[in-house]
Image: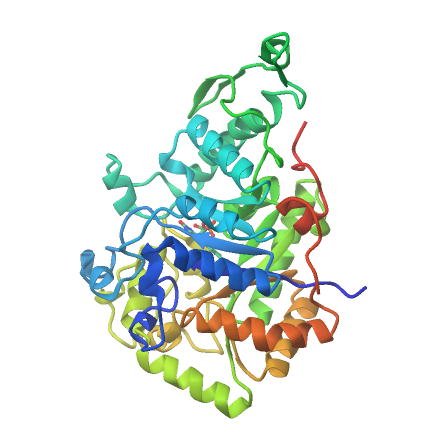
Length: 445
Ligand SMILES: Cc1cc2nc3c(=O)[nH]c(=O)nc-3n(C[C@H](O)[C@H](O)[C@H](O)COP(=O)(O)O)c2cc1C
């Protein structure tokens, strides 16, 4: 059987996620993000399209690097206002049966003992369909809001995250035996105390002693997603992740990132096929190439390059408002998202990046590929990325919602299915079983 593409819809519990400004488009309904039934309907559309997951991004803090304040972010709805993504999940789980939920939580400001319980609770309520996109954050504004002067240094954040992962996995995997709950009305024993044990973790950053509060859930550990591609971030991903998200402007750039991750996996004693790698992708599809191009041009009329630049400034920690339009953006140190910055300090098509070029590129917020065309042209591109860049699938960045997902489901998926590279029915099982054909987290002992 041909390799089957995996698909996540990429969204966020706010109006403006990546394609900034599109909330102004007359057909866009992202303003309905405050309503649970909006999310349930979206989840239903994705399940109709046999999507593997809905991947929800999140950010703690506001984008205040551009011009040194949050005005542009607030005015343009650049990931603010933003609500908690985890709270959307139970409602959507109730109205779907197979769709997985990959939810971003920044571990830097959450106690591991409490977050472990929240994920266990969601794994129970979704019957094994929860995943966690592990992030450490990249905003000083978040650190200040949480009572610190600035965020921890980039690599140190990953060191602390290593400890965090050790703790939560001990809680999920080791604290309770699978048969600990007896629920025996006659003897009056609900849980056999001999089958439950506290963890006792003492590290540099955390100290946790206690019994996990939740009984074992279908997957125990949520499916672990990760997206760091700096050298330290890729090492963290190779050590912990089951699914890795990558971004790249071209197939070649993504290919190189996948090769780097593959080398890092090998250094950790893992194989490329032990993980799933998904690339960010924007799709604008039409019945004819012309129709697709016209739709893309129409979207671009509503897009906000300034919104894209505001987002990018905070992602990279660089205040682009201080740059002349044609000043080359050169390599610099950042404690924010190092791979995003590195991607835009290298030359692109032989020319250095400048703010003028960034504004053009950020039209639809794009730090990833954009495929514009007929279903068959889009499918050709997806297939060639899968084969040549060795990605397992895509995170579909939303443009105008819900039409971008509805059109993808109605137009592109049948084309992928007719080529034998997309499933025609869901497999049974948990999110992990569906994605990786594995029952347990690979580090479960
Ligand atoms: C597809 C993708 C999605 C991401 N989603 C989030 C997110 O929702 N919240 C967040 O704080 N960071 C997010 N990030 C940023 C990563 O967590 C990480 O900070 C970034 O990739 C930089 O890591 P690095 O410096 O190790 O490369 C995302 C990155 C990628 C590639």
